[in-house]
Length: 188
Image 1: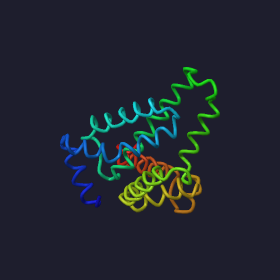
Image 2 (image 1 turned 90 degrees about the vertical axis):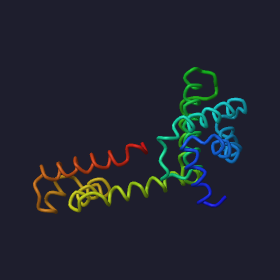
Image 3 (image 1 turned 30 degrees about the vertical axis):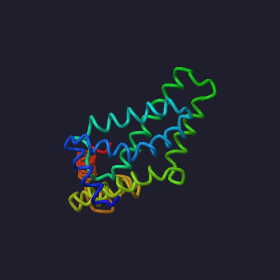
Image 4 (image 1 turned 180 degrees about the horizontal axis):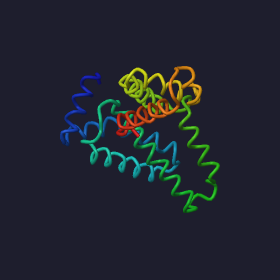
């Protein structure tokens, strides 16, 4: 399916078109199911988790933004539901062999870029959105934020380097954080 066809289908889905939703379901459900089974190792539970994910996708269709590809967004929902299930199962002791260490190992393996292509798609999209949001910051504010958060420079070092007061640096960091948090709130 061409990207423009997928975008049109997605737009119809967001408007509440049940046929568009059915088409998305038929297109992506098998991959979601296979992915889910790989994580939870139980076909019945995987079916339920995929159904819950598609239900959440439908119920929140108006709040979902098109900056993500549809498939990466769906995989993120399924992945999140699988991890929630595994946490609950671990807590409820349904899996005697699933210790906290094993759960953390599963989480780390599936967050590892080498192991999860779908997470890569999501992260690339998120990185683009972050970069665009960063570009929207005022020049001096962006410079201070980058020095602090990406180059790990202390506020005192930034103030000295740029010839600013410590208070100005801290105010600019606060401002940048507030703007970025607002820009990215729908993605967190």
